[in-house]
Length: 343
Ligand SMILES: NC(=O)c1ccc[n+]([C@@H]2O[C@H](COP(=O)([O-])OP(=O)(O)OC[C@H]3O[C@@H](n4cnc5c(N)ncnc54)[C@H](OP(=O)(O)O)[C@@H]3O)[C@@H](O)[C@H]2O)c1
Image (spheres, rainbow, N blue to C red):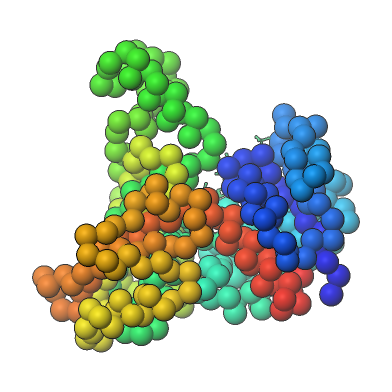
C-alpha cells in the first residue's frame, strides 16, 4: 500500500481549515507528503502553515491534481460536478466529497463512520459524506435501530451559521455588531446583503431552497440521507430545519418511535455504549453547542420517555457540525478506506 498523496479542494474554507487542523494532530494518518491545497483563483498563492511547512494554495485547475491519489472536496456543488470527474480521469483513486452533489447517486456510497463503514468497500471512485445535520442524527439513530428498530423519527434542527460556511459566520458577527451598536431590532435600512434573512437575533425556519411539497432542500436531505445510510428506504421520518444565531454547533430535538418496547435504562445503556456518542445522563445536565464546539463526539442528552404515543422517546442531539458533519468524517473515511486497501 503506497501512502496517501492528498489534495484538499476548498482548503481555505471552514471545513478545509478544520481538516488541516485535524491532520496536524493525527500522527498516524498515512500521509506520504504534506497535502496539496486548492482554493479559487483569488486564494492562489496564499500561504498556510502545516506541521512546520509553509504550503502554497493552488488554483483548482485539473492539471494541478496530477500525482495525487486521494482528494477531499470541501468546496461546493459546482466544483463537485465539474472537477471531481476530471480528478478521477487524472488518476486519483478516491474522491471523498463533503458536498451534497453525489450523495443520493446510487453508484456512490454515502458514509458516516460508525454507521455504515462497510459501504466504503463498494466505491467506484467517489464516496460522499452526509449533510451536517444528518451526520449527527444518524449515529444515535443507528444505535437505536440496531437495538430496538425504528418506527418513526421527527427531527427539529437548530443549526448554526457555520453550516453555511465562512461568509455566513462573518455575516452573523457583522450583523450582530451593527444591531448592538445601533440598538435596533432589525437591519432594515442597512445594505441589502445584510438585511436579507437576517441571522443575528433571529430564527429562520428555512435552510436552502423550498421544494414543491413545502419542505426545504435541507429537510429533504435529512430524510433521504438517513434512509440511505441506515438502509431503511421506507423509514417514516420528517424534519423541520431551522437556522439559529449560533456560530458553531448544530442542535436537534428528536422524537423517536421504536418498533420494540423498551425500558429507559436499556436505551441509555445502548447510547452509552455506542462508539462516538457521548451520553449526558446525569440529572439536569444537557449539552449545548458551546459544549460540542471543537469536540469529537456526538453529544446526546435529555433522553426521556414520551408517553404521548407507544414506544416513544425524546432526545437532544448536539455536535460540532464542521467536525462530525464534514471534516472529521471525511478523514475517518479516508483512514478506513486506506486500511481496507480502497485507495
Ligand atoms: N459547513 C458545514 O458545516 C458543512 C457540513 C457538511 C458539508 N459541508 C460541505 O462542505 C463544503 C465546504 O463548506 P464550508 O462550510 O467550508 O464553505 P466555505 O467556508 O464557504 O468554503 C468554501 C471553500 O471552497 C473553495 N472554493 C469555492 N469555489 C472553488 C473552486 N472553484 N475551486 C476550488 N475551491 C473552491 C473556497 O475557496 P476560496 O477561499 O478561495 O473562496 C473555500 O475554500 C460545501 O460543499 C458544504 O456543502 C459543509
